[in-house]
Length: 370
Image (cartoon, rainbow, N blue to C red; front, side, top):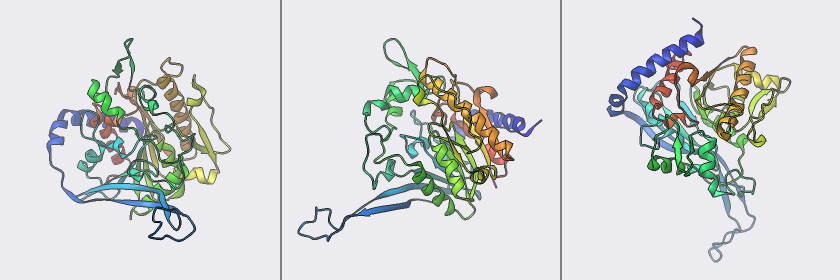
């Protein structure tokens, strides 16, 4: 039995056990040794001149602060050595990892119960880090059309589709009902400045470097590229768990750029970015696992299914490139191991305990659970 097969079988078995006892697990109290919040990184722009009481609303002599990350953390008693740092995706915030639309427990506390210190990040210009030194521009994603956060993102995230009357029809694992639909739609956030994933990676790597023994990154969606880039900037990234990375470039050696599979709407196609081989090889120094849910199909009439089909095709090439150069990357398509019905937001759905157990099994397999 190869390592990947063993990992998957162990994870599924553990997932079944946890799903049967999830109620008891959630009911147990959590003992926290330390918790709090802080900011990482940041800068300011300053207007020349002198601040005066007489003209206290003028810009003269004042600064615009921004471009930092906001971090909320919890450390359980007898925490494991390596913390988990959670990086959200585009148009999201640390809420991605908190309670799901139906109020079920989120990864933020589920992993604390498992003994890990958990750091939730609001990347620069998002969520509670919503200050920017640069003004929003017309091309800033999601800023120009507030309606984009309704049906568009619902479909692109493969949460479900709409019936002939225009009512939302969720996929198997997403909690059903108007209340849960609205709760999900209220999770989107619009950035306060231009999207800058190099800035985001700089700040994330700074947070990693603050951890005495390093950390494991947990990323989602557009946060995937931030995780890859942070690992190029810090040798203290000890592993990466990536949930449906995509929407921003995967990283490849600049001499081995991948084949681009185009989506029906070309702008939704997966993307790649080339870096020098010396930089790319840094991604071979740590174990990496990528998880993708259900409803992924190139050529589907559902634009979300088609779009994520191109991302999955890119993920296959990304994993192959890492392993070809001596790395340790694993790609897990959940339906292939019997876990069906998950959308892009699999960490918030009805079987999120089972999804979480896959990661726990992987962390144990890779020796990252000490």
